[in-house]
Length: 99
Image (cartoon, rainbow, N blue to C red):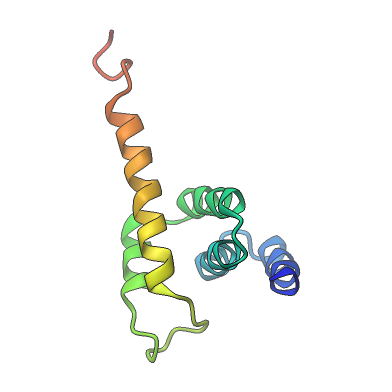
C-alpha cells in the first residue's frame, strides 16, 4: 500500500484533476484501512469531477477499456455515502431558506 501511495501521490502531483488517479488513491487508502485519507481523496475527487462522470466511470465493466482496474464494489458504496453526507449537509443548512 505504501509503494502504491507514493506512486499515486507522484501521479496526482503531475495530474491533479485526473479522476482515475483519485479513484485509485481512494481505493488504496481503503485497502490500507485509512478511512481519513480515503475521505480526503473523495473530497478532492468531488472537487474535480461531476457526479455523472463518477457514475459513468464506476459503471464501466472491469474488462472494458478502463485504463486502470479499480474495484467498483469497494468504491461505489463509500463514494455514495460521502455524496449523501454532502447533500444532507446542504439540505439541512439554515442559510438556504434565509433563516
